Image (cartoon, rainbow, N blue to C red; front, top):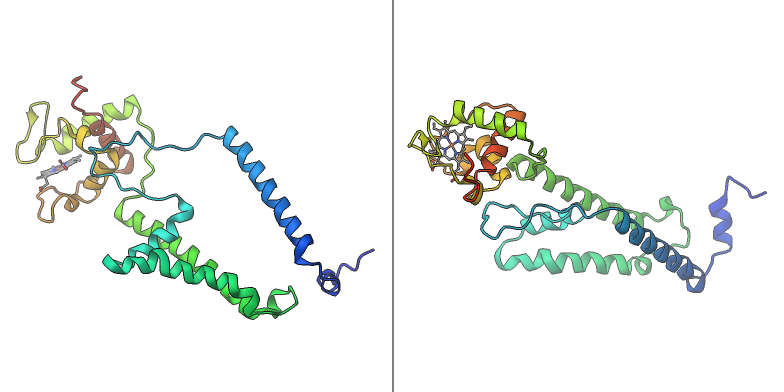
Length: 239
Ligand code: HEC
């Protein structure tokens, strides 16, 4: 029976060689991961967004979550300095990770006895997690990250009703309504749903001095209005 208390001590006594033992295990793992990913790609569809619309200037592109930390890093460097974020810092980090086994030559695999290696890895991990969280929170605060419920017929009807009650005093729609604000008859052709949501949440994103007031709609009410308005397109001459 193996001594359960000191498995790592035992392993340390007979270190296996990087080549071929460790490399073989790594290669095996890589092939297994590749196979699993390939299988998953057959089973699950890629979560696509709506069709890209080159006329839509309100779309806020964002990378997938696993690249958000990198994306966030780039926000801290502007103009010619951006190269620091895109190349210099990542190159430094990767060089450090590659050099790590040579900088910290300890033979034990116990984390506590490898403070340098452990500190560098933890710091990298922490930076990635922190940058990802900051990116998500910032987008949340600006209303960029919106998970909108799918549009239903009911929602559109409710949205039309809310629009009539709260918005049409200022905005005209299909020839009816106020004239002190832009006509929204074809708003769906020039703005997407997330933009409409952002305007209702914070009218000042349209202009700092806007007279559009903050209308206290509940989340479902706002989703209904944005669903209704986003369907008001040039082609949709329905009503
Ligand atoms: C007090 C008048 C007023 C009310 C009420 C009002 N708005 Fe506005 N809205 C404006 C004005 C004025 C603008 C144009 C922004 C500017 O330049 O000031 C605007 C802009 C907008 C825009 C951007 C239009 C574009 O072309 O980019 C949207 C979308 C919008 N409003 C939606 C709504 C919705 C939805 C409601 C109801 C929940 C609403 N508004 C209520 C005055 C109003």
